[in-house]
Image 1 (cartoon, rainbow, N blue to C red):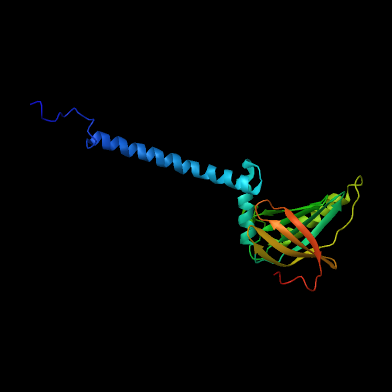
Image 2 (image 1 turned 60 degrees about the vertical axis):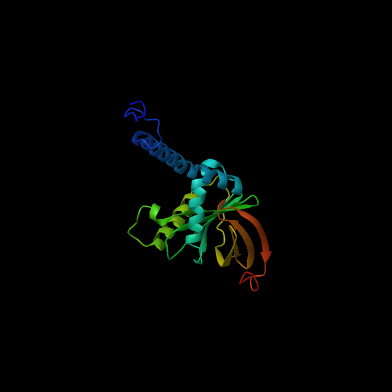
Length: 203
């Protein structure tokens, strides 16, 4: 009788209760690892691209928009120059996504607005851009306390990818600059003048 296995002995590894507990532990571990993956990814991108941790999701979404609209040749329309800042707005005709270019104090940054995040107007995208530009100009025109000057429009002549950066040639008036834009930060890390007739294609 003493050698017969006890039905109450659950310490044996093959006992159903032990197997169930092992499965539960594995599931809890798997859920914990899965939950930690986005946090670890955000920490990595925060460290690699030098952006605040709480902005990583937004910057990743911005990088996706850069990729999505890479083949678009965007013509930027200048809203105005007020003080030291210049704001240009352009749109990708294929996707309707809007690109905003803000430059001033020796720095330039790009920010995208996805078309599917905007309230859908009854007019076409071009009409939306016209509305934004005309409204901005009207708002600035009524302000007499700041300098006002209509700026020149800009056009992206060509661009190419280089790792996590986009190299693009931007023409404003009769002058061109080659910009190195970080897709994750949206910032222009390097800018240098180039001859407009020889800058494209980028090699």
